[in-house]
Image (cartoon, rainbow, N blue to C red; front, side):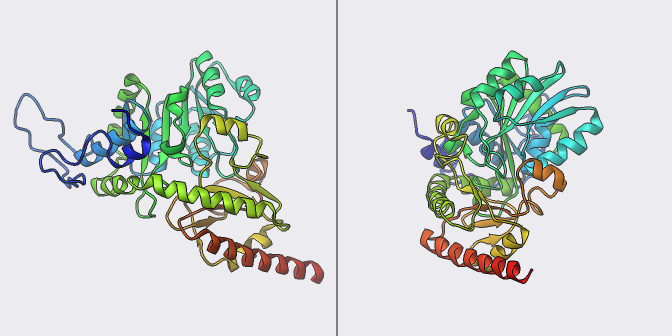
Length: 392
């Protein structure tokens, strides 16, 4: 029977645990497994290579993303790093310009030590992307929406370019999740998630997930996962499975709140710019509507300068001011010193990450309360800016 993705998040392909009927997947806290035969091992032997709890999670994300193999890693960066280790010395990778700061650091500082070259490209421009392909380009790495400026990449267009040049495509799908976007269905080769964020949803797990589209690539990534060893533990796999069950309800409510807040900020005189793919004025709006089923719960907005951003953060009361996003509590962050601190000021400004930029992930608080909180914090920031201006 064909099931909607919301149902798959809860039940997946299996109902509970088959031997006992337990509704929840058991936590197999075992590092090793007894083998009944000298000549033939069972499906599990050592938990780095495979664990029943992690396997249930990996099967679930593979099903949700319509892929062949799922992989659970110790963090989002462990997943990203492992996938990029599919490349070899002498290879070249194209990377979305305003990529997550941790990915930027790994590509620009770690990969180059292994003679893997890179070029950061504005992937909203397909022509620029196509012209950046080199004879040794083996992969194209995409974020859409990108972090933190919410730029939209045409996945179908990039996949066509990749296939014409015999390149793999890797897509970070953290902001959209399988609920709103399925890159493998559009031809991508690997989809990645910082499962710490929306998939977990409760700020209690650090985890990364990857899904491959075909068997052969899955076997290669499985070898890297086993060799590199940055696997997700059984306890965290269990917590992530539990968090994923409520994603449909959580992300829909958070996305509705985000749209209301974006509309409010868009009309506010003190806010210079709002970045959100759900805005009809967003340059990538039409493409995003075509390849996604929702606009998500994350947006960024720009205040005049660092002092204004600091004043807003100092006065806002409901959101947690922290690194990360995608939780039941709203999270406000400052990319300059948080998610994109690995970039120099010059590199940030090239990407539109100004000192006045704030990123917000809408949680499950009552939307009117968030609006009221934003209103008083913006008023305080505006008053502060006026006083500073008059004093100077």
